[in-house]
Image (cartoon, rainbow, N blue to C red; front, side):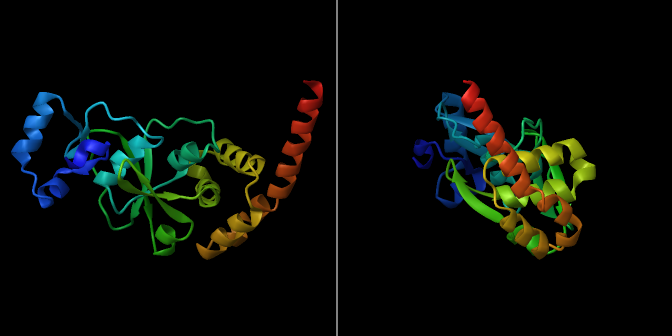
Length: 207
């Protein structure tokens, strides 16, 4: 069966593969398949990959991009575990309504917002479009009023501490039109990285 490898499938995709809705419902009733949310199914007991809940959202919102706190949490450049899945959607699209998981839709304008610094990962067989670490930093900084200044700067510091590239952040910021505004923050990345390395050496000597 298509679900045997633990991948997630939407009902309409299962139907397109020739699997009847009644067959899926019987499998759910028998406990061999679980309905993760409305219209999304997976083999019962399948191992949860890192980011499984993001795949669940992407299966329901295929034109969305996982971003901000959810991307930062995935890339481990924040201490925040978001209660909602943050997803960028086209400005003219209605925010999707999901029973589960809860989502926080962010409206973006223009093709660069959906292409620049966006990568695709496959999680449980589902293509998941997500901002890269550098793009996530750009978004956190440019949407500081939404996410909070402290959290945006924390993301910047963690990115720098993990050896993130200031050049990559600068290029992405320029391409989506916020380079000038974010320049003061981007220019601190090499110093934040150096400060982290110095602190790491100090902690190592003390241990």
